[in-house]
Length: 551
Image (cartoon, rainbow, N blue to C red; front, side, top):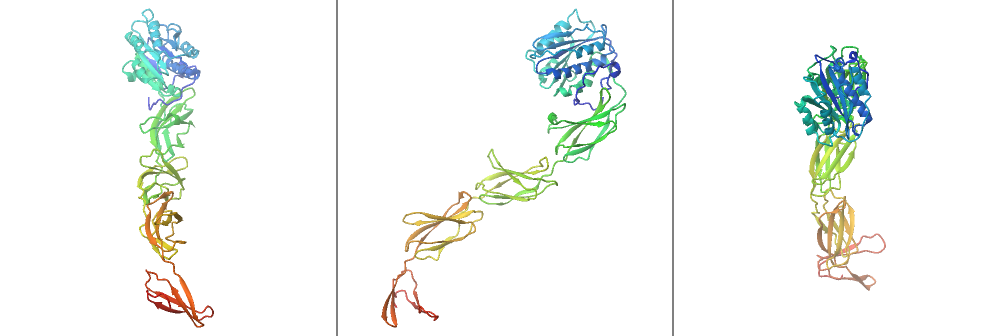
């Protein structure tokens, strides 16, 4: 049997006859007598719909023996358990395989708790006692359950094994696999089976049928038809791949293609399993809408009129969506980091940038347009290392991310700050600009104490005129760089305003006047200018020494 994996949906109830036996299950030959008892979980967790799936699975296990069921040949019995077990039919009840399958179809559903131990003990006591069993005949129990037992299973399963009963354990969905491996006979890999969902229980039929047949001493013989083969997976893109295969033999009615993504550990992500149905003549198809950079398990199953044929399986990986390259910090300030990168693949929809200070649990996110090749992160903390990740965004998926770290600079203060054009009532302060600031705050106050005054100026300014000061007074003047809402270190200077200049005039005659003024200690001399109040005649001037205060 080729390429079988537990991946198929279960068959619906069909009245099987020897003629309808599938190529996968076949017929169990060279078996003359055996006692087979199904111990079936009927608890509330299963539900009526899934109980019908279990009954179909049981029918499938009867099919290989359909020709040899008789009172002296192969006999079947059924125990259903929940809170307490009950006999559905005994080993001696039915004389042929058709009656057994009809009885299985008509089983009622119990519901209740999951007392698997009670079900196994009931089978041991009522089906394999000395008055029931036949000497030298193979004895088999097939346990089917979907949950963990609410009672002990160790002693009942040991009781069966001590009676030389071979125990098969079939677990579904929430079944406790460790518990079932204890219940199953050894070697465990030949008597324990498990599927993650009721929908794929039927995929165990070929394997379990063969093991049950060989355990009775028979040989499972299948039809000569072969399923699809030579599965080729090619032309992988980020969201698709092309598959083709060699067609199956026999009256194929179509193919079912099932594909499921795998985790990095190779486990199937069953919630994302998808399926395609194709006509009998189609042996090529394209799987679309796949995850990028992901390995897929792909199965092609041949479909016949009344059954499922053999399958072929393989694995293929989609291409990873391109990420950016050369992602880097090209400039750092005390409150910003400027990023740059080389864009990746085509069909880009944009970028997502996530950044956070190292050690922080929560980060921030920025959306960036697809045409961008750089971006500046603003309002960052000074002297802080940031972890930055960029994600290329495609139509429905995210490309490979790139992560870097960058550190903001310490806050800088103004290095060159001075006062110019100092007068008795004002001055002009000047400075050299600091990179990365959002503005400056100029403040001044009397050195002896008094009201502090300040004004904020734009980041592109490097001078400011302070007016309305007191003459001949010492001031403390500061400049503080602003980084958003954060203040950098202040730089201060002391400045003394000049003495106020006072002029007085005395008329001496119709053609002369005397000008008097106060001595300014810091002056290096005086220049006196005068001119007529009317007319265009140029002014006259006179330079005078520092000790002169009249002319």
